[in-house]
Length: 127
Image 1 (cartoon, helix red, strand yellow):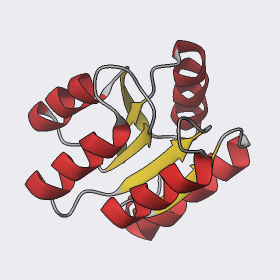
Image 2 (cartoon, rainbow, N blue to C red):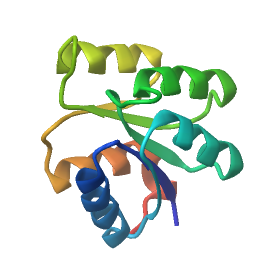
Image 3 (cartoon, rainbow, N blue to C red):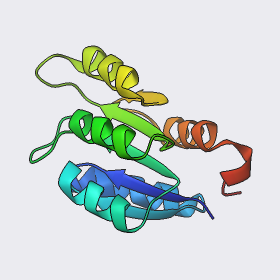
């Protein structure tokens, strides 16, 4: 079973996405910011990180840069609903930093599951 580290400061969205991913057969760890996510990943690396970009404490872009530096093989899906510089710009920066897939909020359950399956590939797909 593939493990996913889900990072988002929005508790409601985090809870909903965790339920969707768990129902699809993935083991899900959750963090509310980049600091917490890095600590979790350092102690228990996941097969995939799904992260928001605009968060308090430590933003997703900073986290992606650090993860890429320390764990070049990490798989990342970046998601954003916008922010200071707009959604598209944030997501394109995330791609430049190494995110394999981008999701603009709001997105459907189908969208997140397709992105996860695509990035994990057939060996780590849950079902």
